[in-house]
Length: 484
Ligand code: ATP
Ligand code: MG
Image (cartoon, rainbow, N blue to C red; front, side, top):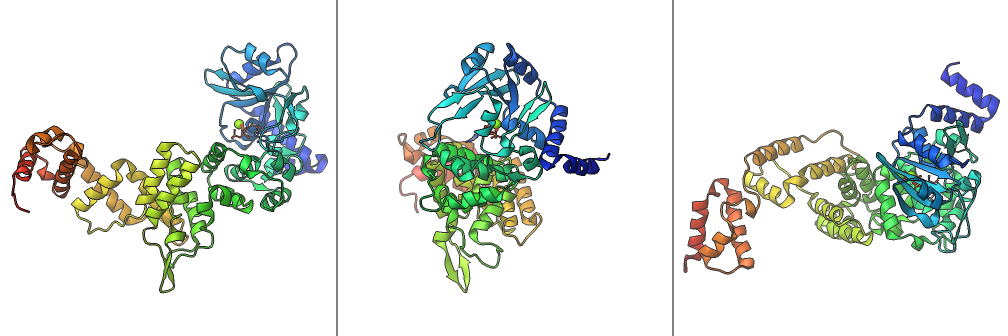
């Protein structure tokens, strides 16, 4: 029977969920698991123990996605016993029963089957109880698509919550009562937002209703229980999706956007002008979608490039203008990323991109003007800035295609860089020692100022970057009453 008919036949004879689980089993049987996995599972099984592939690993194998780590496995073996069976382990979350088994090709997360006690801090169960029953372990997991376990030896799939069917239908559904699960662990709505985007799936009606009710006074949801580092990690993961906008919309529905990214939330409803089809908020989301997924700094910058607009908006002739929003926005983006404890290098790159995103290149720019721009922006940021510009254009919903002026600008930049003209004081034919000697001044800020002044001249005309000429310039500057 050809696949579509087999599909229909199975659904009809078995019930949709069971049929989906069979199809999932077929795929998992054929799946090429990473090499050390069978060996690790066999070692865990010694003495009659259970060892299964679980959670994200099963889900990603079925979706044909490459998983984050090598694999997630679960066992009834106590964590201490797991640790003694392997020569290289890291006690990642020993208290919660997770041991990281380190192999030559990557890490395998091994978690002991557990059921969870009450949560009084809205983040971590008060105590962890281990169990021998894999079904109990699956019941504590957040979403049905994350609550499947595969036994590669027996070729059996444990799918007590019909995750295989949800996966086929691209539905995110909570294991159990969604609002209860959110109250237990406040991270979960952020995971739902992340998976909505990264897996390109839709929360089902019950999950959506629970998300919407989080914002309601007295919902019992403790948003503040999530550490900002975890918030940052979830948003960073969300930003690797093809369309992060889907996840941010989930956060907005749950009123979590205004908690964690208020600068972005307040862009909602801020109207722009005839160059834009969307308000500032949707323009930001679509710019983010259009930015390269493998460049986190550009994705963040795309998301935040216009956060300065609400505060700088001035209505002129019935249209919005936003003078200096890039500077206001850069400062806001910096504060936002500091608040989320983003890595400093990422923060600095994002702030820089937001600040510089408004460059207005014209053919008439002189080489000197282009060199000055390159010096300020830094040649290493040009590619990111171009990516941001293209995304910004696509994100306004009115234009398509690659802007020709960027091509022309790129060609001129390449030519300027190939000529190796000075862009930094360190590229000058003289250095600080020359300045101190010729001007007879001690080390200090004046040395740097003198070099900067020389650089300005050289940026205007690169031919001036000759040692004799620059020394001469310093001497005329040193000479008293040398005129203006
Ligand atoms: P990825 O590794 O791609 O980020 P994942 O689903 O594997 O996604 P992990 O954090 O690796 O996420 O967790 C592994 C599994 O543990 C999940 O698939 C899920 O079954 C369970 N899990 C993780 N975090 C939670 C949580 N906060 N609440 C309930 N179950 C969770
Ligand atoms: Mg995982």
